[in-house]
Picture 1 (spheres, rainbow, N blue to C red):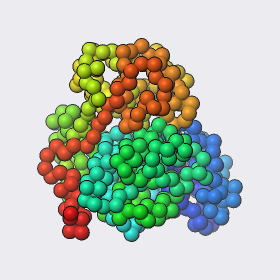
Picture 2: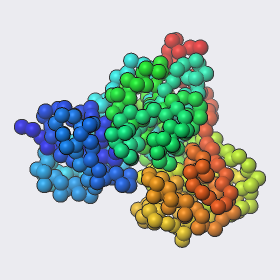
Picture 3: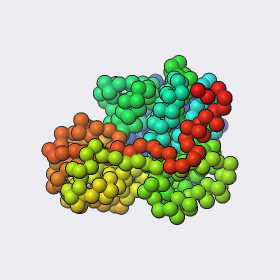
Picture 4: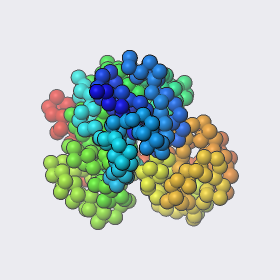
Length: 442
């Protein structure tokens, strides 16, 4: 008997699970993907070019809200939950909807979908969106470069455009970002690594991506998305924790899985978090994964010209996913505004344009700051118009990219940068050398 399947996702883990677990498997017939979290990714087709011989028409992608309707319409036997950074309670709500509608509900085991590499793999994941994975990945890349290693970074997927043009993507220059029409979210992840002289891979088919990365690197750094688990089997699994959200590490899927699998646990943002929250996170790690080596790190915040911030009325623009499904009330931009003496924060809410109205409605915890939403050209335009409409002295841009190069802003823009910094011993470099052994000694 062939089982009819729906894969629940958000244009990332769901596609990977299909490619690894369901594609070309005669036991299953995937009738649909459902999509959530990311705007405008439903209503598309997972193309036949990627789907395999069983799906000559490709596979439709529907809104997550249609799950029960689709289960009944297609007589679905199995629903595979395949996206990240959701509470355990929310996962079980989806399970209840599924089973009440008559289908089984599964979460595919994390190691089952990890591809094995011929190269050394260091994975960087987290327990929540916005913990500091990317800055940790950049630090690791820098360490490996200084050790004389050939490094490639492979990023968790963000295929929001034409999937047939994004099967395997390689970025080594800013021209590549332009030619492949990258969104703000993609640029935030790729641009800082490109500026370090390393290549970034991403796309849809991570079997093909892995082969391409192996051809030019002897170490692959997996830079995870949200709080998802790695797509590649790591030699060292590094997981980043955020003491600003102490307690979340055991409440969110699959962040808790990362906690339990971690070889190295990085407690980040120690410089801005309350000491008792740092200790709370440490005790949680020690209780649930006593084998993990714990590192303390700072998220060092700096601006190009701190004197311009002092006494000014500033509009803070923060990383979008951190504020939305990451549920942070503020990020590095607000920390910088406070640290460098801004007089006040501009409230963008009366001036929101287009899709940003919906963003603030869906994520009501967002206050006097602006998430850098840019999953499409329309969203980027809405962001630009909102910034220009909001009265302020200057814009503090705390996204990892040069925002002023993408949007035409009619007021001064000062970038806020944040980088990994060791807080104490052992350092990240010491741990990498110890974990990878003698072959990685300089």
